[in-house]
Image (cartoon, rainbow, N blue to C red; front, side, top):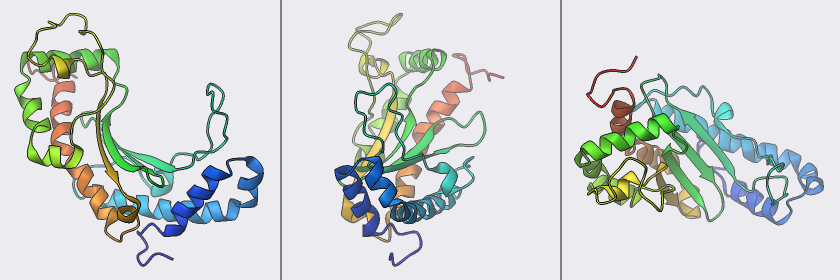
Length: 231
């Protein structure tokens, strides 16, 4: 049992390790009660994250349970036909249409991470972001090259074009930023860190360090290139 209600117990990681080795319906059905017990710990952890997030942001997600994704995999279009994820994951939506960006977490032995950003911006949003970067990259550079960002996330992540985006100069000073198709912030944690009593607050601190980036993006995506508000 964890020492704190918000602390993830070692049994949760042990269950996920066993599931990875026995990823079939027969084993899972035989261990369904264990799964539900471990999932409940993650739901409580997520409740704690919501409480922490609401001290620094406004979160639309109402409960830890609703924030969690199903452990069942959709194998219809996947070459890998294993039926279950071998990790717990979930996300939190920010409240309000002018408050852009989203928060994500994944609990997996040896591969736990806290993440956020813009995974699949639509074509209109991506064009608007690139226009702003092309017009003045200094504001974004100040964030991603700043010490808090580099210490927490290292660098901006996400898929990038190998060529120059259409309508932009390949010799632009910010061409590396203009090539991004996704804008992701990721911080990994060791299993020891995941099992510590401070993990919920450590994760929330990572989310807090995303806010300058989210504020920058939200301002762009709620205004036009001239700074006028978009209704």
